[in-house]
Length: 248
Image 1 (cartoon, rainbow, N blue to C red):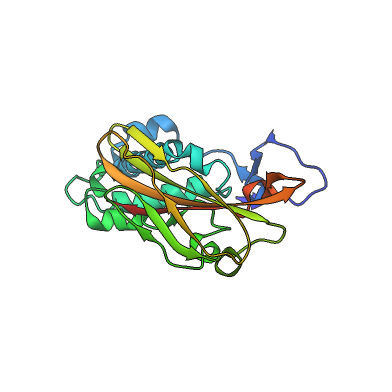
Image 2: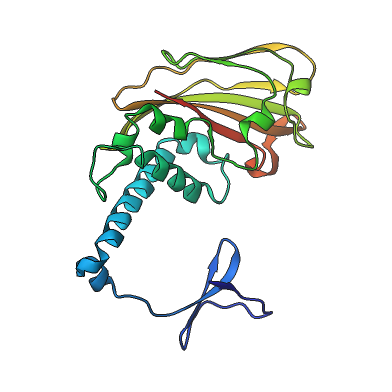
């Protein structure tokens, strides 16, 4: 893969070169390679088929999680969250130590403590990780999903982006079965505060979701700018943080 440096940008195929637009700009690669039929049937590609099957499971598991938290993630993500989450899910899959190669799954990996640990503290927006946005401690009750931030002083204890006048806290409690994609999520009521020096205890209490599988707990911090009494999302959510706090 190479980058295209030209005033003329186009996509398509020319001779043995394929031009396309990716996340890193306009790219070019050569045509050719091994046929799909050979990869699927040639005994010499058995390792490739195993790797492809496990990669597909990791990608699908990442999709399940992203879709389950769409209501939280829509304005708190970076452009590479899909690939980053797939990579993390692949590490979770590697914790499946009972299935043969090619059949290892994220669902089985998540049944282990090391598998859960890979997902813990995953930030959906790498440009606004929670530890750089919320500069104080909080508690999480994994029985009922309640999150408490005691005596928060927004002006002192937030990594506030320029222009922000208000902040909103919200949380999510998700039950998700990675083997079946059965899911249920409950969101807390949002707590909106002016960014000032007034101490306020923030309590986020989602209802308990139905379903089985693993329980996932999320915390979101979103910034707004108030103009003439109306709060507007700051820079389309570029500074918003969303973290998967814990998996149990």
